[in-house]
Image (cartoon, rainbow, N blue to C red):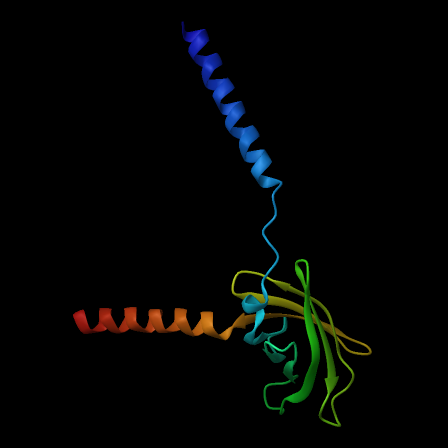
Length: 153
């Protein structure tokens, strides 16, 4: 009898693993335009560079990049942005005369973050840009929770 129970348990486990394996082959739906529209900002890998990307619903926008903490941002116009499957294509052109030509070589939407790679003539930097609305919502909740605790203690 124990052998039959063990066999039944193993078969059940195999069926469960097979079902989970099938689910693992499914991919999330591509992002919608409304998932992308808005303001995204964050730091590059070195934490020296900062970027702010504003994407409008009409497929245009602005990109501001600050390369060092005490330097002013350089401004770029987002001429067009589109969604191609799971990738966001962004084409920018400099507005400031001192801004070098920059390309957005990749942009992928994560959970409330946009992972982008910016390339200049001789450099490449990766940025994680956080969605302003999501960041503000979570920061407001965290502030309220801290305030609530301080008031109670």
